[in-house]
Each structure stands twice: as structure tokens, then as C-alpha cells.
Image (cartoon, rainbow, N blue to C red):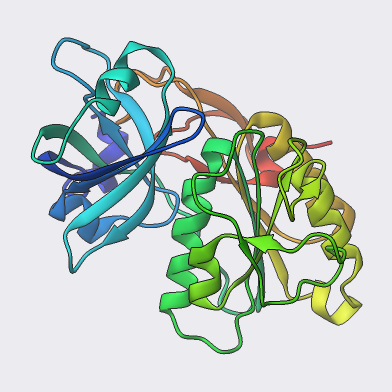
Length: 296
């Protein structure tokens, strides 16, 4: 790492992680659980790993952490098979070893004073949102009322469940949720153009707008928005934040070579008080204030 990356020294680890389980879901989606205790101990919502999918594939793949257990020493990664590297990873079985570098990057940081976090995840952007939701639930703060909205055109990588938790603005036909969120007592709803049962038909950011419109002025003052997903979804989320005058943190996705700040191949333009600067998504992000990335 370069001299400017000293704050990351001693916080990113290389581990030979044992595969604990691997589950396949429709659409060539997989959830892999890895025994990676050093990574699990320091993982935070929004941080990611750089995974060696196979010794014959030299380039590692950046994969967001979806869940982590410091006590259990494991992390879970959700990924969709695209290319030979992830195809090799999908063939890994229990007991196989996978080289993991992590946890990498700056995480989402929830404001203690904001009681209504709104989490929006789209496609492969779902994992950091799940991690953040679990983290909020683990705080056991009764004042926090998170709302999780997820969108996907592929079948969701979990069984849909009819929710017992109301969501104002979602509409009577939008009834289904992620079972994990239900078990945590966190309200959630799903969106898709694929006509899945109980899901909002449209973009997840459109569903978010309906929910925000249903809030009182007092409730809107308690909202902060967190988003991870494809670039158009992030731009739309930033637009919602401007429209409703709420703070917004986004997690960017970029192609990466080293993922630890050395190659500067994942740089993006970020607006700072001193002007426009080039920042690395891997270690300066992946989480940024939406206002510094999207201005209109």
C-alpha cells in the first residue's frame, strides 16, 4: 500500500478460508459461507472481500460481505456467476479452501440521532443492505425503525414470505418480504419487474418514493438513506435524497485489480470542499456521501 494508506495497515487480512457451506439459488446465484475469523472479527456493513476463485484464475473478485459472525468466525458472500472466476467459485464444496483478503473499505455509518434508516438494495447490491440491517437489529435500540427495500429482476436468493409488519405507502398488494428481516422484526418489502408474487411491480426506488411520500414531516426528519446496487439505482437513490432532503450514503461498485489501493484502477470523481478529487472505491470507499458523487 502507499504511504497514504497507513490507516488500513493491520486491518486487512489474508486468510485461507474453509468453505463451510454453499447454497445455489435460481439465476446462477450462490451464497457461500467461509470460515474466515480475522475477516469476520473486523467486518462492517459495506466492507467487502477480494476472493481468489481458483488458483488457475489470477485475478481475484471483489465480493461484498452479506453477513458476518465474529463469534462464529464466518462470513457469507452472495454472488452471481459471471465469467470463469465465479464459475470456479461456484464449484467449491464444503471443506475446500478459498484465499480471502478482507475486510476492505469504509463501511456504512448510521447516525445515532436518526431513527428511520431506509435501506435500498438492488441485485448484487443486496448483501451490504442485509449486513447493515442485521447490524442495526443487533444494537437493540427500540428507537430505531429501519425499513429495508430490495429489488431484483432475477428470483430473489431467498424464499419470499408474506410480511406481518406493515409498511406505509407500499400498497395493499405489496405484501412479501425477506424471511431474515421478518425474524429480526425489521419491516421490508420487495420490488421487481418480473411479476413475483407480493412484490411491487417497478423499480425499487419507485417503491421507496411511495414510502417516503407516506411519511409525515416529522418522520422524514428522522430518515437517512443507504443504498447499494447498479449505478442507475444509486443515481435514483441520490435523487430521492435530494427530493426529500434526507442524507444518503451509497456503496459504489467498480472493477478492481488489487482492491487495496495500490493500483488506483477503481478511481471515481468525488466532490470535496477543495474541489473535485479522484478517490479509490476500494479503500476510500466503497461507501460515499451521495452528494459528493451525484450533483443532479
